Structure formats: structure tokens, C-alpha cells
Image (tube, rainbow, N blue to C red; front, side, top):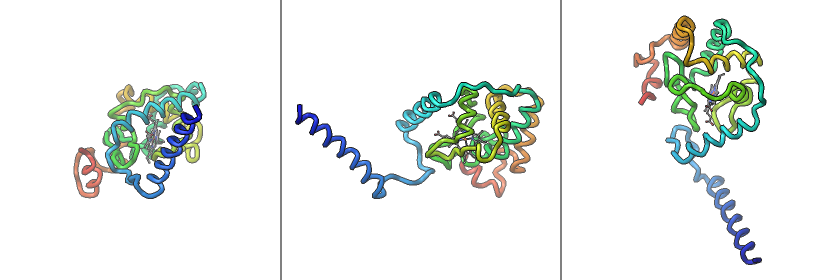
Length: 191
Ligand code: HEC
């Protein structure tokens, strides 16, 4: 029995030491633009979902998805989120392939998490990723506005959708697939 415990302990210490050496002595690739491994993607997303599910308070969105609130949400989204998460004119955000882990592209894959979880993530950000904690920059009301917009993004009333198109076009002043100079990086990242 003692031998078994000793073997176990030695094994664990070896793994920890190996991981430390791997990271500390530069074997871990620091680049953000390398492909995300399938195993990593499979493990990381459900872990994040589970962690948020555990922590996000069971609060209800105090706002109605009124036109005013959706438009306010769009304004906040275009100014702060679209470059990483994409928008109606640029379904692949400018930084879509520039982050590790990648930012989900919401126009291609609408955010389907409960609103209290989206609110929590937007407030607190996600550690070890490019997702910032927005409570440093946005008020609680603004965070609810953008949360409300996110959960209605794929079912916007036509006039709100039109407003979004205008706002998104205005952000870069470029149509989505123009490939015009100045948009080079953006176009190049579309695969
Ligand atoms: C600098 C890039 C960047 C910006 C700007 C940014 N995000 Fe993120 N966001 C990310 C990344 C990267 C992830 C994925 C993190 C992960 O998978 O661990 C993420 C994840 C999320 C998620 C969780 C999605 C899911 O399905 O798990 C939500 C919701 C979100 N962001 C909303 C926003 C909102 C709203 C804004 C603007 C107020 C914003 N983000 C701005 C990079 C960004």
C-alpha cells in the first residue's frame, strides 16, 4: 500500500514538474493566431459554460426588448464588441482569427446562453481570453441593453435590423466584402 501511495505521489509530482518546465522554459506557443486544437475547443467551451452556469446569479433582464433598448444595445455593441464578435455587415469580425481562444462570431452563431449568463460574462469578462470585463467601462443599464440586443440578435424587427445595417456600415465606412485598400487585413482574414 505504501509503495502504491509513493508511486502515485511521484507520478503526480512528475506531471506537475513536467508542466512547469514545459511552460516556464518556453515550450508553450505564445501566439494567438495559431489554430485552436479540436480537443482544446471541445474541453474549454463546456468548462466555461459549466463555470458560468455555477456562478451567474439567477437575475432577470429588467429591460423589455423595445425598439429603444435594442437600438441602444446596437450602439454599444458596434462601439465595443463588433471588432471581435462581428456584425451584420461583417459576420467575421476584424479580430475573428486574432484571438486565442477565438471570439465567437455572433452573426454566424447567435448567442443562445440565458441572459443572466451573458450579463455575467459581459460584466466580468473571461480570464485567459480576449474578453474584457465590461463593468469597468459600461454601466449596469448599458450591459443589460447589450445583453437584450444579443439575445434578440437573430430575431430583430426589420426596421431595427435596418438600423443595425446602417450603424455597422458606418463603423468602418466599408461594405462587407469590398476588399478595398485599408480593409486589406480584414478581407485577408476571411477564409
Ligand atoms: C478584444 C476582443 C473582444 C471584445 C472587444 C469583446 N469580446 Fe466578447 N469574447 C471575446 C472572446 C475571445 C470570447 C471567447 C472566450 C472563450 O471562449 O473563452 C468572448 C466571449 C463572449 C461571450 C460568451 C459567448 C459564449 O457563447 O460563451 C459573450 C456573451 C461576449 N463575449 C459578449 C461581448 C460583448 C457584449 C462585448 C462588447 C461589450 C464583447 N464581448 C467584446 C473577445 C472579445
